[in-house]
Image (cartoon, rainbow, N blue to C red; front, side, top):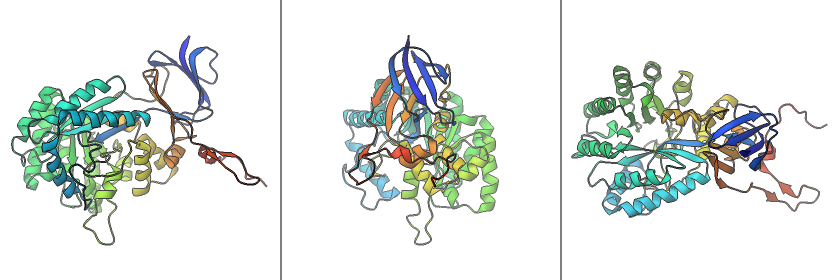
Length: 434
C-alpha cells in the first residue's frame, strides 16, 4: 500500500506523462503506469511536478515589517539601511518570531521549502539571532531554514561586530556572512573578506557574503573572495550574493574575473527583484538594469541561483515568497529569453538554490526525497511565464498545502464557458488548423 500516487505528471526534464509513487518520505517508483493502491491519489492531469522551490538569499529578521517605524520614502538602498537602523532597537524576539512564522506559512503555500536567511549581528543584544533560532526549530519539519551571521553594518565598521558574529555562530547559526563593500575603505573590505573566509574555514562552515552590491565599477571584492575561496579550498561552500557591480565592470576585467570565479567553485546568487529596483538609482539615462552578468557566469559553469532577498521590509515594499516571480523578473531583467535560458531561470530557483545552500539534490527520482510541488503549468517555461499556481505542496511524503486551480468562468457568445490559463502552452508538434 502506497501513501500517495501522483498520476499523469510531467517532469522538468520533459519526461511524461508519468505516475509518481510515494511511500513514507521517499519516491518509491516513477513509471508510465503504476498499478497499485494508495492512501491518496493526486491527478496532475498532464501538469508539471517539480522539486520544491529554494531561496538562497533572504532577510527574515526584517520581513513583513513594512511601515515600521516609517516608510522608505526614497525607495533607495541607503534609506533602507538607515530605516533598519531605526527599527533594530524596537525589535523584540516575540515580534520577529511572529513575522517570520507568518512568512514561513506564506512560503509553504508557494512551494518554497528551503530558505537561507541573513540575520543582522552588527549590534548586541542578538535579538534576531535568538528569534530565528527558535523559528528554525519550529519550522524544521517542513522548511530547511539556514541562518547567516550577517554583520550588516560592516565587520570592522560596526563596533564589536566580529565578537557578535562569533557569538552568533556559537549559538548555532549555520553560515558566516559579511558585507565588504560597506566597510569604510576598499582595503578594509578586502581585509574583512580574508578574515571571514578564515573563520569559515576554521569552523568548517559555509560562507555567504553580500558582495559588491553597488553600481561602483571599482567595487571588486568578489575578486578577493574568489582568491580566498581557492586559497582555503572552500569551493562550493562559498556564495557571492548580489555582485551587482559586475554590471558596471568593463568587459576586459569581467573576462578575467569570471574564469577566476568559476575556478574557485563558488556560487553566485543574484536577487532580480531587488537588484533591478535598488541599483542604477543615481543614473539618469541610459540607466543600468542592475543585475549581474548571469549568462556569462552560467556559460563559464558557475552555479547561479536566484534569491528573493526581501518581502515587505525597509528595502522592498513588494514580494510574496514566490520564487517563480523572481525567475520571471530574472528572465526580463537579464534578459534571458532563449528556451534554454528560461529553463535555466526555473532551475535557478529549484536545484541551483539547493546546491548553493549545500542541500541534497532535490531532483525528482526513484529513491529520492518525496518533496514535490504540483504546478498548474505544462513545463518549466510555462511555470515561469504564468507564475503558476501551486496545486499541491508535498514535503517528506506529506501534503502541506493545496490550492484550487486558477480557472475563469466566461460568458461570451459562442466561446468556451471556462478557461484554464495552462491550456495556452505552445504545442510545437501540432499544426495550425486550416
